[in-house]
Image (tube, rainbow, N blue to C red):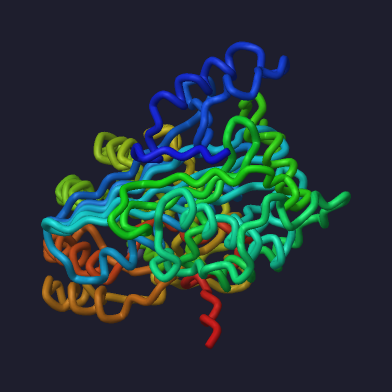
Length: 498
Ligand SMILES: [Zn+2]
């Protein structure tokens, strides 16, 4: 029996309501099959009281991007996968030069348990009168702690191809789609529809190999099958976005008797998707806080040294206009007179770093003096703002073996030097920051100079128009353990293949 819904598939209000009852009441006593709601099952997030839902909105220069995603301390690789996938689309959207355009991306959970998490990412793009939407799904295996693509649900290439055939047949037989008008990525099955599924349930489906699953997903990139979830009864559902089937709004294709197509991971996902929703509990180790994998998308860390100064508050206004987090390497001796602006910076998502007490050259100090200076500065910042200073920028970038041994913090240098302190020319600062930045760059500015602060709106506009994401230093290096005393000048980014 075919179940389908022509309502907007990412907001099936009725289905959510019933699913909520199922979660709150007793899903353990199986309901009669006809009582289960048809269509894609979404996890009712109202039942997950601990769920930390994040929203990042940037509206500037007539272009708005919104990303809504769950922050999952017990499944951090999935948070990273979701936000990074959204960031990749943002980069493509921002760098295509359109004006008066919006991109809204949101996440709906498809499954929530310690064993398997599932998420559906819906993207809606509007540009003037035209708009389009698209959705994809990501999964997480609590056993291997790996994020996985939709292909991981299926038992290898034969199952992927069988699912494609079944969806194509259902589109032709139930939705009057002509066999030459199937969505791109599906082709008309060569054999006619058979009464029984051509693939029997495999007695022991293979465990998923994450590398193979990602390679398969890459091979089938853009396939209509990538928006793949389960009904409350455990059948696979493929959701097609408006326009994927010519002249049609969202369509959900429920594939009956699809358990035989599932991998071992797919069977666990099915169990999680149809069971009671609970969030995985984080481990005891310190949970990472970065949300974007900067080795995959264009990130840049803007850093400001030698402050705070009289124009730092104006700089914060400029950064707020782009919701752009930055990193401030502050001098300890300036903290006491600038508590308010430092507290504001912390509150607005910026990071504070240590730039020593009074800008001494660390290579001219004894080991003991280096350690005391850094500690005194960190303590002043912590007492004024409650914030840690996770990294150090040595004054003048100067360091030697003795200093490295005693600083006790990772040392963050830069790869883009705007020389703003030297020329004090806004136009030169803008030009250098935009022309010299590459993905993973750390850019050096000084917020004690007014021409630098005045340059920042254009720097932000220019880098955003190239698709850059502004991140703090800690976020830029989020995937790495930075070693105390080691110097880093940018995020080393693997060269793209090909
Ligand atoms: Zn300095």
